[in-house]
Each structure stands twice: as C-alpha cells, then as structure tokens.
Length: 150
Image 1 (tube, rainbow, N blue to C red):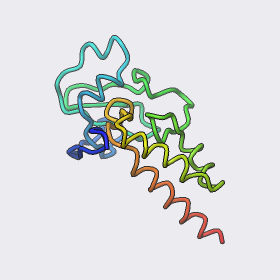
Image 2 (image 1 turned 135 degrees about the vertical axis):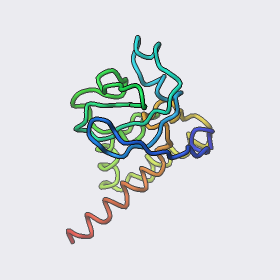
Image 3 (image 1 turned 60 degrees about the horizontal axis):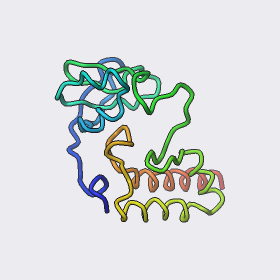
C-alpha cells in the first residue's frame, strides 16, 4: 500500500472552538495543501485538527489559529459529501454502486490504485487519512439500514 494509506496517524483529539465537537488531528502537510492561497503562506507549525461538523464554519484549527471552511479547497457550499478524494468518488455515487451491486468494482479500483501507491490521501483527503475504511463503514451502514426495512 502507499505510504499515505499504510502509515497510521496519531489520533490526537482537540475540541472545536466554535461547535465544541471533538476533532481528530491532521498533519500540517495536509493543512498546507488544503488551505487556499494566500492563507496557506502563513500557516504556523502547529497541531491542527479538522472539524468535520458540516454545520460548523470552522475547517481546521489549532490552539492559536482558526481556518474557516470557505478558505479550504475541499469546501464548496452545497458540495456533496466525498468518500474518496483521490479518485473523486462521492458518498452518493458509492451508495448507488452498492445498491446496484457494483460496489466491489468501484472499491476494487481504489484498492488497486492504493496498492500501486497511486493515491494521495495525505494531501487530497482533508483528514489526511486513508478512505478505505470509509468504504467498509458505508457498506455496513447500508446493510444495517436495508435489514431494518425488510
């Protein structure tokens, strides 16, 4: 697997100064790539975290710095939620593939590219983490939901 999906990032937790959610740390390398110019030119070497609360205006934050979502590459008002940032796969597209029985093909492509070190989760994914576990989580969630409806 590529280094971005093979290494495990320390999961330090910080509390968002705006919404109060507990958020996971993000490598500075990720923050630098996600923050738009000119703000990315002024980042401090600090311990940043990502607020993933969609209702919150805060994107990344540290003890001394807050970066609003509108200053980040991944945030676009009304943008659908992404599952895989490296290969532009939205949650809605993958859920559609799950419902049609095509999920193995989509996930297989991502796994194959990851094995070839063709992913860039450490800079493309705002969390800096690999998305492969998110595919499994979505599948489990869909299975649980569909089992409740049968």
